[in-house]
Amino acid sequence: MYIEHNYGEDPPASDVGTLEFPGLKLVGFFWVVGMTHVNTINFPCLEKAGTLNIGFLPLLRSINVPKLKDIGSLHLMTLPSLKTFSFSAGRQNMGGLEIYNTSLESIGGLTSRKTSILEIHQNKNLNTLSFPFMTVITLNNLGLAQIRMRNNSDNFFLDLPRLKGIQGRMTLSGLAAVNIPELTYIDKELNIGAIDYPEFYLDHRCSNCFPTTLTNFTAPKLTRVSGSINFDSSPALTNISFPTLRSVGGISMNNTAAVDFPNGISMPLLKQVCNVQIIGTTAPNCTSFDDLRDRGVAMESYFCGSNQADPMPATSPSCADLIKTWSEVLLVYCDGTLLARCIYGYTLSKGSEIKIAFLIAAVALAFWYVWRRWYAAKAHAVANRDPISI
Image (cartoon, rainbow, N blue to C red; front, side, top):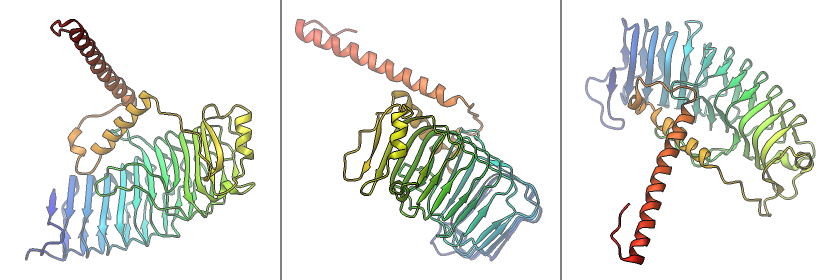
């Protein structure tokens, strides 16, 4: 169902203050956008929704969903007058939550035990976000799982007291505190601060996310990060603690205050890391990282020094890594709200990335082989004045 008006144009005469859907109990795709006079949306009977998109409603102050328990994904975007939102039907199932550019001060009733996507961006009044029952961020049918928090209130506190695992990545910036006491594994990257990487979600592109105001980051039970741990441009962060971390793909810390403090970073049980790059302002404390290198824990590239020095060149990514990266970019692109239907109904297995990587590698190899045969035949023809044939 679509209810749409071009945002910024003069509203039609039929615009009303309240949108009411009194008998709607089930909806697959619901879209309300650009209705400039709407201040209230009521779904008094709605119990289940596939995708619910509400955006670009400048006067919207209230969304009521008293019975909603099951939702594939909820998107609240550019709602500058929306200050409160809450689920009140008890335990819910939620596949994804995206809240972007609102005046929300709180979000209540978040009781889901698992989800795939948490995207909370540019909500300047949002001080606390709590998921008291969330235990896992799990892969969706497109192979995506991520937590991404950016540029909310300077005092923003993210509370995930029961979260044990993230089957994708976590990116945090623009927040003051995070509580992850039970988190044990992250299957991709952990990014803290101003992390620069492409995003393809509608207009949410960000070339340099805002620095975090965190002063302390600790993950007391985190034992494994399959990707990298990246801390970038976190000037207030003076303490980083991973007391049980044993394995991580790589460590990168840049312009983060903790690297200049003697006891600012603690990873006492780390036994395996491939690449380490630590860059401080003048003379970072490299003792703990030098110990990793001396014990052979850092197995590939290693650099620890000031930003005045030339760091060791990073190890070039393998062909398989590049293929995997681009397959993920394709998946993210297709997962956007407007583009998800491009592969609607097609379910990817957990091993889909490997299959895609092999497929792309096979095609690339075939093109390279044909090109090489053609080039060799051309060179031979020029030398012998023979017709070119493959």
